[in-house]
Length: 358
Image (cartoon, rainbow, N blue to C red):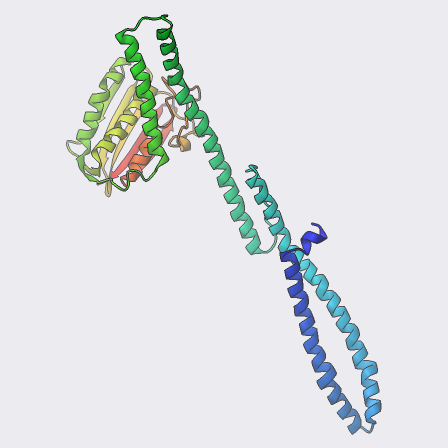
């Protein structure tokens, strides 16, 4: 650290305060010694038979000169102590300022060492935690942009190809072609609605009205709507549901949660596999789970399956990878209704569960 930085700004003020405190203490001591002590010394010497002039000369020669040297030494020591104190306090703050400028410039890996007094060390810990949080947010932002661009690019490319082929007369218009075009536009609209939902976590809290629903009936209805996707892959589905299971939820949002979970189960269960959909009442809430056979989720990926645009399958294959936002939407919808979500997995399969207030 340079002299200018050490004695500039905060460092200069700290050194100045320490030096002023030292000088003030010496001044008070000097007043006591040179005024009060001088008078007392002269009085005692005169009482002992010495003249006032002799007593004054003896005081000046012994006490005053020694005190003067001591005062100079004290001032120098105070200055050195002030410089040490200023450096000890200002150095960590100077390092923190440099790290903050690096972060402002886009270097989110900047960190500060844990040094100085406990208060400054605690501030350094908080700063490093903030920097780590910003680095994680930047990583998520970049992944979001990359994945969103991919999800938008795929249907747009398909639309462009179909429209150019129709324009150039390469293919003839037919109901099948228009159906394909409509499917791609629907895909873009679904993605747009999902992004709107994820971009505003409070969108449904202001108007969400919970009502009593029968979870067993809701799960059964959702399965009937998804039955064809399971039958197409010859997946066996077992429903383990009580006759009636009341819970508090919003009907449309609950249907979307169940549809997303069943869609995931049909996508990730291999042909001829097995899926179990169950629910049960607990002491304070109700639990619903969807488990499927097949490859489990690696342990390193399991904590992140509910993140937006996170894919366990990195190939970006729509048949298996999906858009990476289904479980993020499930988490947001369930938590908005006062519930919780979670995932368990091993090499034999995966279970996704959620709870709702009873």
